[in-house]
Every structure is written in C-alpha cells, then in structure tokens.
Length: 511
Ligand code: GBH
Image (tube, rainbow, N blue to C red; front, side):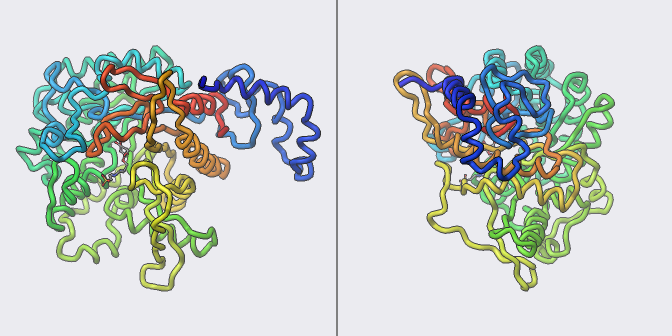
C-alpha cells in the first residue's frame, strides 16, 4: 500500500467541484442556508484566510473552518525529551538524569542519554519542521547546559548550541519560541536547596532566565518561563512519579508550588530587565479545564467557577495576584507562606499566555452547593488515547481558551501543546497510518477554530510533538510525534498525520 498523498484526493475533488458544484450546493442545503462561505468553496486555489502563505497547488478549501490571517502553526519539543548528548560540551546533570537512571522509575528503564539525538540532528529536524509548513518551533533550553551547577559561571559551549539552533531555525523561516524550564532542573539545585522547596531555586531561575534573554532576545522574540507548573510540582514533589520522586507532606508541597509560581514572576521581570525591547514573555501552563456537560448559561458559569478554583495554585494566582479564599481555606494550616510583594511579582503582566491542553479535568454541571458546580464522573468506557490518562474531549480546547479569556482577559493565547499518543506501527515500507491522530487533530482543531471564529485571541497552535521522544516516566514506548522515531537507527519517518498537519498549515484551516 502506498501512503495517499493529499494532492491525490484533492484532484478528485477538483473534478467533482467543476462538474457538480451546483448539485452539491443544492443537495447539501448550503444555498438554502445562504452559507456565506460558499463563494470560496470552489474558488480555485486562493486562500480566503488572508495568510501570506501561498497555497499548495490544487489544495482547495472545502469547508468554513479557517483560522484568522497570521495564525501560527508550529510543533513543540522539550530539551530532555529530544536532545540526548547528556554528557557533552560541559552539560551538568539534571534531576531527570538522576531519576531516569534510578532503576524502576521509567518504563523499560529508558533514559534520555541519547533520546532523538536532536543535539546533533537539529539541522535535519529543522528541515522536518519546514516540510510540515510549520512557521514556529517551540523548544526548551536545558538549564544545566547553560549553568551546569544551576548558578554561577555560564558554560559557553551550552549557549553555543542554542545559538546554532536558533540561527538554523531563522534561516529556514521558522520562528523560535523558547521555553526556559521544561522540568530538567539542575541536579546541583536539588542537592543544594532541595529544588523547588526553596526560594533560592526561584532566584536562581530568574538569574538564568535573565541571562538567556540577554543572549538570545536579539533573535528569539517569545519566551516561556516554566512549562506545566502543575505537573512538575504535583508529580515530582507530591506523587513521586516524576523527578525528583518526592512525596512531600501537604505544607511542604504547597510551599514548593508557591516557589514555582514565584519563579515564573521573577523570570518575567528578569526577562523584561535583560531582554531587548519588544521581547515577549508568558507562561506555558496545563490549564485544568472544566467542560460544561450541556452548554447552558448555568453550566457554562459553573464550568468557569470550577476552572478558576481548580487552578487556584497556578494560573489563577498568576493571573489574579492572589490565592482564592477557597484555596486558602482548603489548605488551612498547610497554606503556603507568602508576602504581598511576592503576590505582586507572581502577577507580573505577561504578553501572552501559553496553554497546554490534552484532556478535560472534568465535566461539570451547575449546582446550588457551596462550590457552585458539581463534577460529573467519567464513564469507565470514556475513550482515551493509548495514554490512559488521556481522556478525549475535543471541546476541551474550545472551553480552555474561552474560560481563560472570560476569567482573565489575556492579551494573546498560544496553544503551546496539544497532541496524542498512538500505537504508531511502522509498516514494512516505512509508513505509519495513524488515523487515530488525524481524528484527534480534526476534532480538537475544529473546536479551536470555533474559538477563533468567536474572536478569542488565539494566535497559534503547537502540536506536541514534532517527533516521538522520551515520554518521561512512560519512556520511549509512548509516541506523540508527527514523525516516527526509529530509536535504533535514529531515523525519522513522517506519519500520515504529518501530511494532514501540513495540509492544514498550508490552508490555515481545519481540513
Ligand atoms: C505534557 O504534559 C508535557 O508538557 C510534555 O512534556 C509531555 O511529553 C506531553 O504532555 C505528553 O504527555 O504518568 O500516567 O501519571 C501533559 C500533562 C501530566 C499528562 C502528567 C501526563 C502523567 C500521567 N501530563 N501526566 S501518569
């Protein structure tokens, strides 16, 4: 079997278009609806979306699901998950080196020593990004490549790598979006300060963030401070399933969480102080989204209340500069110690907010109880991807950005991660028919388009991930990429979803 190319289907469509357009409109009821988009439906190859992107010859917009002009299509990765080269050019150890080399912590005892070898293959991978027609790439910087001990003297060779990579992206017309912390904390800071348990780590982060802004902001215009505070705090310091593998009692966990949001705020300030004028900064958080189970005004309100409360220790305090009353009440004697000055730092204005969305936190309905909402339990048979935590609900993308905008009125939103894992079997002739991922993308992006059509300022979308990579505690067996990784040969193969993503990026619409 040959992998069908998008061009093939399109040709047929074109034929269909020429001969049957009137009949089609009639039978589909579109004329009766006075569907305003009908004029572009068959209008040769011009994009109606206003992007300056030239459309692929023959690729025709057949639906009304366009994104706004200038909408940015990108893919994302993170340093420890793709770079490898763990012991090269003076890189210091991170807590993920330690954790992944501790037997029993990672499925199959995998580790990130080699990963995708992106450290050496970034040029090849830049071409992969380019051939997806992606115009942006979100990567993260390994803190311990820059400061092997977390603080102190910077390591020029580490910086050189990111200089080379950023230059390569720009030469290929791809805009770099840099995340400063995607969980690979320098081991030295864990040893010295107990990592996020100490405010010293937040201070060290700010120094590192400012340094990176100084060195890269002539070319990197968008910085994310930290990735998914909820995840690395809860799973790393609360549940012990991510590095550094701690199970802290509540009071200490609350305090570590506070230091993480504080690090974000200090990071924003350091980037503003040391970056070039015009450098933009925000966070990348996995907003926990409550979805109204029926879209009534009452349930929507309940879902907003729930979303604000569930994220109280993270995005809510970042956006509002205060912990909610319910959060402090629930924490009681375990509540974090903080000052009003710290709250103001945490609330430092951002230029945009990055939101990672995979799954809904819960479905909710309105309730007259004290909370104002009631969680609806997931059915045992609720569909998931191959990642069992990954409950599927495309509308989460819509409600995530809509709640964000309603609650906090951010200036700009980027979907900094969205994606799914799959079985992804490589055929004898090197194809991967990941129809499940295509279904996922179509469903989720349709809901994102719904949000942009309503005027919610979503500026771009980063698919997680460019490549299959080191999926943290799940190791290499769990694959999220648009490109399949053969970890033995380190060869990359485009999955069918890569063609699908590319077609959408080219037409700037859901297809
Ligand atoms: C993102 O987290 C991460 O930013 C990214 O690095 C990662 O590769 C990607 O998602 C895919 O997982 O181990 O079963 O207890 C998304 C939120 C939180 C989802 C942690 C998985 C672990 C579940 N993730 N969670 S489990």
